Image 1: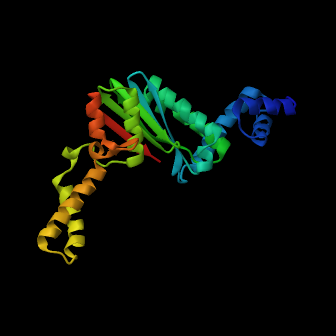
Image 2 (image 1 turned 90 degrees about the horizontal axis):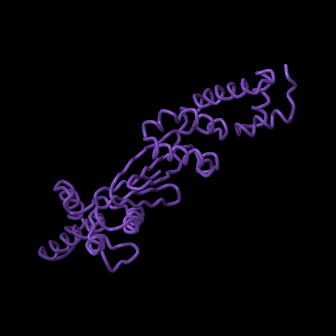
Image 3 (image 1 turned 90 degrees about the vertical axis):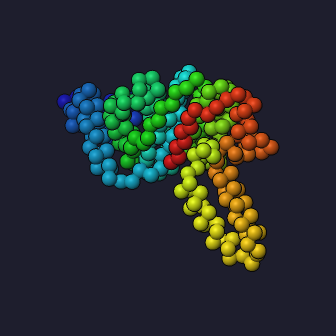
Length: 258
């Protein structure tokens, strides 16, 4: 059995990133054999991950990476915002997002468990792979807000700056509809019923109440429909006019929030 020196423990810690005590314990179990100790730590990280798997991972972070006409949005969940801002967690998210972009989402998923288990061992929290979204198109832009909300916009026409501006707008305004054509009759009926109760309780003539109801419904859907919203960076124009000036059309929008 090799002597478990401080230098040996430090060497193992530098190569794995886990705690000093875990490294010493692994080296003792491996009788000083560095390669065996690494295997022991990998098994240990998997066991720890299994024990923490039942704990809620409701926090986390989201990242977007792009390469030409392709963008990948990836979410990684953990238990607390403290860990979501941890360097090891952030590096893991970056590595997984890069793998998804270059090798494909399925290939990234196939090789993610061991990497995630290692960070679970270091942080002590349950960490789970969240949603992964891939978007392709001739013009792509994205925006990530505080690592918690991400948007990818694909356009036909326009440029990447316009796509990014629209992504920023979507992140802030959270539209429910892309354009008026997406609003269903069922949605209109539901909203009308809600506002009708408010308006009918007013002491106004029937024709006035009817106009008020129509106005409330129109305002509600204008605020919820992307193309009719006022552009966040220039409220004097709508998203529709912004797109029209650039000769652009929205092909796809993906928004994700943790």
